Image (cartoon, rainbow, N blue to C red; front, side, top):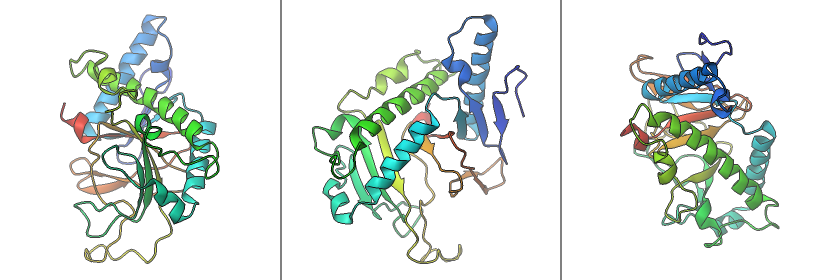
Length: 266
């Protein structure tokens, strides 16, 4: 399915996970047609967010090279010894640090089969949470820049919701300032190691293992990067898909966006 505009902006994956181009949003308006295209993208984003709750974006301004570099840095960090990584153990009061098979959600009995490292950028330096250059070369400089660029993409998306929500255009800018020490804008690295044993049958809830158990994101907006060929993310659509889980296909250079619980309250 494409829009009626001259440039295809919107398509649907299997069972309705949309792909939306942000090109017109990042191009200065110079004509009535360009503003019309922007309005159409805003409509598509609103429709996807208020129905599916998930969509994928292209033409977002972050290059494939930058994404690949972030993945390489992530791989380098997770390849360190457990002792090294645990030097940066999660500090919940600042929402920074490393976790190893520790997150257990209400939907599961056992902890998720993953390790993670999350960074609230404004808290990292003062709390000495950056891995050293000896441990992971380029970690801080690469991921600080990557976080800032993703923050700008997130703000671009959030501004699109202010019109339909009848909010001031800069409402989300003011409440998502990465320079404020109490902000909760977080970059999170994830690694799903080889399973220690086979995942149990779906009917056996006592022994079932998840890489990431069923959940909703509590935050406002999630930007998620996937690698081609590494599937696993699924979306549950109780009405549109008759209670089925729908796989989200990883695509190179594409960002998957998830509407969180905070934004749903609006």
